[in-house]
Image (cartoon, rainbow, N blue to C red; front, side):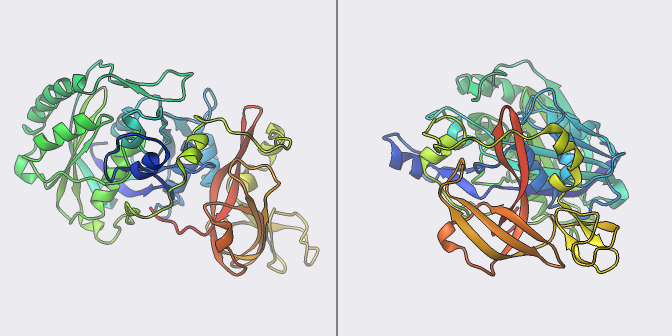
Length: 458
């Protein structure tokens, strides 16, 4: 990545959060006062979170040469998940898309080996056993970064040093849903010594006095706190509170939040401590002022579900399902025939009368003309025309709220509403579209565009 820089960066934080107070309300356990983490909703996964982050980037049209999806919690193994992200973002067919994951450090390798035009999207949905230190220390978030040429970047990478160390401090078995870790005191001395050696090499190339901020990213809270005290002697240590360590997204989420407050010419030292140590120095350019990343969601912003709901969403608590047949699995051939509609939400505009059909129709339903142009409905706001609260339909998080929404500029869609409170809905309210997981059946995930009143908080 030396020689290129960050052209655009964005992060996505879910609406929900898990707090120590909610856990304490449910069971008798010591709590860390004020501890909170971001929690993906029941219909969110690493893919949908990554796509939502990428939708927060500046105009991507014609700028993406390749897409890389980094996660340790992919919806599928063997299958390329990046292909679904590619489809949801409406990228051209000749733009290659690849998965790169399995370890927290994979995003660092992807970032350092990328070239201008690479779009890196990350998503992380972290699951821990109830009572584990990582239950509140690790959170869910997504991030996306588009790399560009140095003369078109808001921040450039000016120096990097790395060291690799085989260390069993945190891991997850392929068939297990939760992460495990060793005793937290064990890796502290290893990472401290490793960071000292890496920084000594780094400061042979850049001056300590040139560093204005420091970011420390590490799965272990103890390692992060220890290295933060050491790094504070270099420059103020900054970070985004209330998220928790967000896996492959953590580096980019922290970088996005810091760039949002940095001034042109200032530099950030990023320390990543996972299976080794990576130290990177980014310098903000004069273009940062005009293309500053959007602000992130505040710690106190969002809804706290019950602890039982949070455990159910993560598959750690099996509750009685609705006594109705589960939805049928998605047909792979049918899904392949409608990729542009199912994943990119592309409708059709009649070339004769301008009517918008959704799903797209070859023959216009208004004037009967044949031939239409594609139109992107995923980025348009819509208005609720009518809705129904269905307490009988199958849903992982009842009740299911179905609505008819009218898009600005034409087009009507029957869509499920998500991230909403049924009692607060009303006809005429404004909504936006978001890609979510509708259900999973027979080992196949059914992704669909839902409507939400939630503002696109980053």
